[in-house]
Length: 96
Image 1 (cartoon, rainbow, N blue to C red):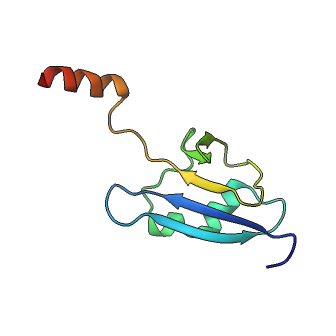
Image 2 (image 1 turned 180 degrees about the horizontal axis):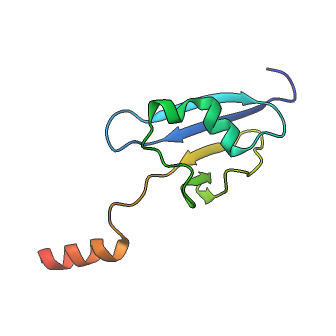
């Protein structure tokens, strides 16, 4: 590992199957989009809609695809919610 490379990880949890986890070395000045592209996420999990606003984060903090990476970042790709929190509460209340 060259001293200036950034060690980052890209993760995604599909609805079924094993989680996607890739550790990468990225050159300085790389952004979240670069890491996702290099990780191969789009090929293995085309359902991962990482281009949608709010579907990307670094350590649970929402970021944009243009966000510059820092050494040790964990890029998280989030799935869309199947139910909103309000819908889930209504379903639980209806079952009672």
